[in-house]
Image (cartoon, rainbow, N blue to C red; front, side, top):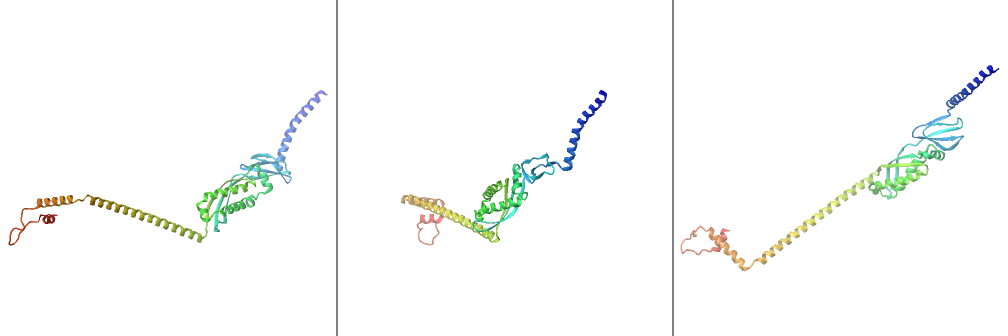
Length: 282
């Protein structure tokens, strides 16, 4: 009897060792057959829906187990996304403005379950696009058409601030916006061009006027200087100075005289007028 009981005990021990392995294999086969697992791809999060109810937990990247037929996992992309659109708005001075705007945003990874529950997967059409349009209209209405061009960075900053507040409500994060173009009507563009030409002409006229004023002031200053010089010369001229200059002129004439007397017909030797001679030699 003892010999027969020993093999039986050995078989039982072996069986107890094999059973866990069989169970594991069966579970793996069940998981594979009934898809009892899920792999969340990089840059995604998994929203767990259990019997039609959104679970509070969010699956991160990697391998996860799930209960077949009871749990479904909805993958949602949380990487940077781009929304670009053409928007038609009005400026403060009632000019029609066609704007091209590009928005970079991403979903809050920790709250994608709430976004899925409240909005769904059509969040771009339901939330993002309308928020962009409303934010852009609200901001452009605060500026004139000319200011939209000259203050583009300020306009972009305000649009970004307004849009970020709207998107935060729906568990989204705004990264950046780019207003690539402000396009106005042909009439307005022509009016702007005409204004710029008029401003350039006005600036040129102002510069010309300033130049003329400067030249006139220079001439006045020059005339004053000449008048002062003439007055000074007049003040320096005295009878003695005039007589001295006459004597100097006569002496200079004598130096230049060649010793020949003027030729005359008849009569005595004429009187030589030194003053006239000196004047002739000048």
